[in-house]
Image (cartoon, rainbow, N blue to C red):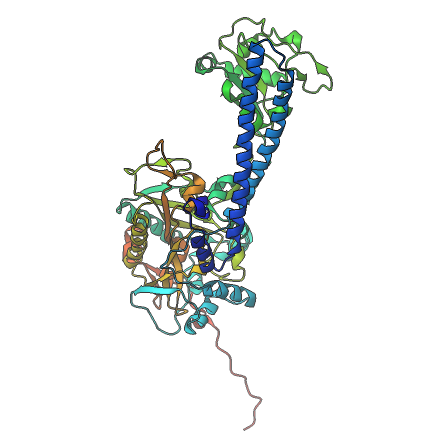
Length: 606
């Protein structure tokens, strides 16, 4: 998200720049004023909260002074209690105001770069195509001829095939027998597919060639997780993606937990050495609470951890007569204690021993043994399947501080990607061009926020993608995406569109974006050495670019490398294809297999 200081004119911010960026995005300008209002409200409440905290310290000092002097401090203590109540209420108000501010701030896109062409035609083209329920490709092709789509063509490369009656990628997939879409749909639903034989080899060849290509350019290869926690995904993806793109995985699994809280590292180590963790689990099982895991937590974080796992309502102790049990002493040590509470399965309150009379346990020090709740942070959470390797790569440095000697950082991410494609209903439903599951090799780079570092990297990344498609000898054009079609994070975006000769049109194969510090701010990925007199935080700049979404690239290869009898393999991929250089058709084209119409036999006569 944007830096809140941009909205604070009195602190050198420039809210007019945000308003202008919103205009270029064809988005709400009024939202800027609402952010300014909420920011002032939050700061006012924060100021009032600090005042209450100062009052509390002042009252406490006065109470101490009265007690030392032997005077009655009853009234001042009442003031302390009243202050605590007011402070708790104000803390709630501050959090409420901050949540409202952040929620609105997250809806405002990155500042659009001055070089981006201002238009929203691409958005209107897609919306009109969806409304008309016709092929987006056909609709875009038609409007392009009428010059109604204003994405600026930056440059083109390659000789385009212009023959008539070339087969499209859908036909070619069927003729080659490299994918089974019927059985894929039966098993996985619409747009499901099986890659078969040479289709799988071609897919793997593109992956291996892509990773090799980027590794030679000082990129570090990285395979990412295929799913992410909801809270982390929320820092990397915008709200619309949750509805239109991302698959949610839900789970109701539980993990019963035994918690052993200890005062310091020494008893923690002792617990492990003498095998008390298994004993702890055994005692828990005796209580009728078999544990899925046993955790050690330091005493100092007890309250926070209790809150996180919901222990407030799950504390269960031991009966007083069982307090001398050997297992309990092994778990507790000399200063352990049991909580007073309801015995599991009992509706009555029972007095529970604090265990202080127990002998010194092997653990030593002060320890506490608690029954865990049914859900632990990190277990049983909703997760989202990734739509691109950009998302987990973006979060890889979550909370890190990146130093000048570290940058630039270049990652070659590889992953399977999953997209609902809810916003593309009716578009490209045939073939493997637009599917719910596909493989991708992604460029992801991190730079300094200073100077033109990220803009130089942006040009380097799109050049990498261009060089990749030059190696494959696939004609393409580079277009600068119009302002109205930019996603929230991007300040500027290039697309590389490959030439598809069967439809005589360019189609998107690569998106290359400079997101500046927009994503890094939410992920708290700071730049540079922390300074005591630091006035403003600096965040790294983050950039992403497709190298190849392999199924789409396959479609481009099939159309551009087709012959009368099959499809040739690009020379750059042949070393990765186990010696295969040509894919012959396995079935004859429909025109050749169509039965001839028999002539109607006459009934005689002249």
